[in-house]
Length: 327
Image (cartoon, rainbow, N blue to C red; front, top):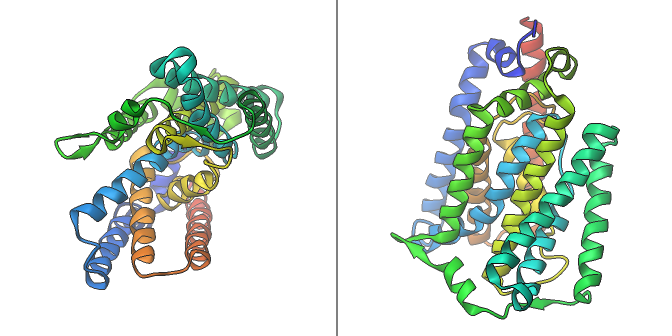
């Protein structure tokens, strides 16, 4: 491709961009850690950090998938609340019928199918991602609700909850699962042909298509990945809580998008990585934890996170213009 990938173009943004991209978020995380330790005696305790890690793991799995959607230029996947709910409901509802392991696998598979439907509509039909993901998510969740009677579903196998809540070397199992997903996602995006195609498609769709990149399949695939990640997150959430309801996934899409955008992944596509997104997640989770410990009201927390998104998007636009002018 003549103009190269968006990652390459962003590197031409100059020393200011290098400083902001490499050190800005690390400094912000350090600042939150220092402030949190001074503001609350509970912040720097093992129990608090375990709670933060556990909460971060559920959202983090979705963040890995959402990174692919943003990098490929898919704007966002708003079916995440529905696919999380489907994963949670089915992982519990199917346990008495087919057993815990098949139920867990079926929940993730259905979420992946939901992502596939969205991906086909977006990548091959050309429907707007916001419309497609909202529509598909609503339909699939409605079907699942009808199948289970539209009520709260409770777990019937306490051993599954114990397994998810177990620890290895003091680290919660759910955190280890998140770390494994993050490692796989990182190598898939940065070290595989699919990852290179994803970045190329998001950076310059026409140029990638002219270079024989299967752009439609790549774009659809990003939503399948997010669906699978959301299904896994939902299944783990259901097993942890031992209950699931249709609204259990509400808000997770906003948390994931916030983390990815704050982490420096371009909302316009073509630039970003899983480590960047996870760094954004760490910052957002620590900041939220500090606000909770300080007794900050939920509306104010929402305002702060919304402001973060606005700043991150504005910075993304400014840096893209600078990089574009450097070509």
